[in-house]
Amino acid sequence: MNGLPGISGSALSETIELLRLLRFLKKYINMLNINEFKVYKEQYDLFNSIKEIVPLRLNNQLSQFDYWDKATTSRELFREKIENNVSGEMAYINVNDADELLNQMEEILTDGIKRSKELADGIIPSYLIHHVKDYKKTGLINHLGYETVLPLSFEVETIPPFLEATARVLKLGKEFYKKEDYLKIQSTEIYDKKLKFYKTCADIDNAPFEIGRVHAFTKGWLERECNFLHMTYKYLLGLLKAGYYEEFYYEIKNNFPIYMDPYVYGRSIIENSSFIVPTCNPDDELHGQGFFARLTGANSEVLNIITIMFLGDKVFDVNENNELIFCLSPKLSSKLFDENNEAKFTLFSNVLITYHNENRINTYDAKNIYYVINNIKYDSICGQLAQDIRNGKVSNIDVFIEG
Image 1 (tube, rainbow, N blue to C red):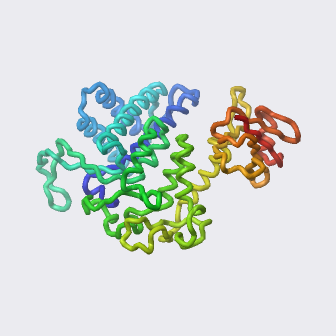
Image 2 (tube, rainbow, N blue to C red):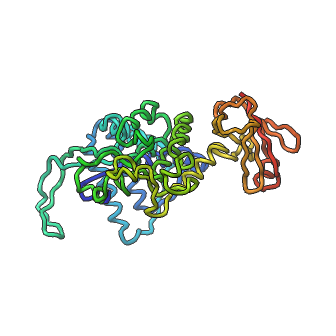
C-alpha cells in the first residue's frame, strides 16, 4: 500500500491506535500526583492550538473538513518549528486541561471510527482515498514546476476491505466489535470459505493501481489476498483479548498449522509459515500450502496468545494496600484438559502450574479458582508469597477451577 500517500490516502489503523494511546494516557495521567507537567514551548503552543479547535468541532461550529484543515495546519506549523531544533524554552500544561482535551479527542476519534464503519457497509475500512472535489489555485509553483491548489472539499473512496483495521479495533473491545461483525467478516472475500482461514484482504481487482505494489502480485500470493499468518494471528489474538472465546477456539482449529494436514501444508505443522496460499490463487496445487517469503512475525502473536490462554490478562497486579498479588485468570477451553482433567505449564522456566478442572468447564466461565502450595490452600495470593512466586522460590502451584 506504499502508493497511498501520493493519492491522499489514509489508514484507520492509525486512528484506532491513537484512540488506544489516548485511553492509556487518560488512565494514567491522574496517577502522576502532580498538577502540571513541563513541555517545550513548541509543544505548549501546539497543545493550545488544538485545545481551541477540538471544542469547536464537538459543538458543530466547525465542519469536518474545516476541523481537519485547522488541526492539520497546526500540526504542520509545529513540525516546521522543530524541523532543525527546538527553542529550549519551557512551559507548563495543567493536568486537568490535558485530561479535558484527551476526553474531547476521544469523542472525536470514537465518532470517526464509527462513521468509517457505516461508510464501508459495516466493516471498518483499513484504507481510504480522499479525492479532491473542489479547490482553488494558490498562484504558487512547487519545486517540480507545477501549479499548486488549496483543497476545499474531499470525496472519500473506500478500498476493498483489509483484515488489518478489524484486527486492531478488537483491541478496543466489544464497544466497536460485535458478534455480528465477526459474522460479517466471514461473509466477505477476506474469509476463504473452503479452507476456513483469513486473508490479508478481499479481492482488489477493482481497486486503483495507484494504491501500491500490492497489485503487482498474483492473486493469493505474497502480499495480495493471501493468508499471512502474522496478520491472521493478530485477528485471532484480538478475538481472544476482546472476550470472544468460543469464536477464538473455533478459529484456531482451522488457522493453527498444528491442526492442518501436513501433506497439504507441505512442511512441519509445528512451525509457522510466512503465508499460506488461499483458493483464490490460480494454481490449485498450491492451495493450503505454506511458504516462507521472509521471516514471520506470527510467533510473537502465538506467544501472546498462549500467555493469555494459560495465565490471563495479567499474572501480577497490586491491590488497594499496595501489595503485590498473584492473579491467574486462564482462558482455556474445556477440551484442552487431559484424561485426568488437568492442564499443565511451566511459569518462569521453573514453576510448574497444574490446573485441576474436575467438572471440565471452560475456565473463562469459572466462578472461582483457588490455589494450593505446599498443601496449603489459598483463596488469593498476595504479599511475600506473591513475591516468592515472582522470584522463582516456589516450584509447584496447583490451581483448582470451580464452576
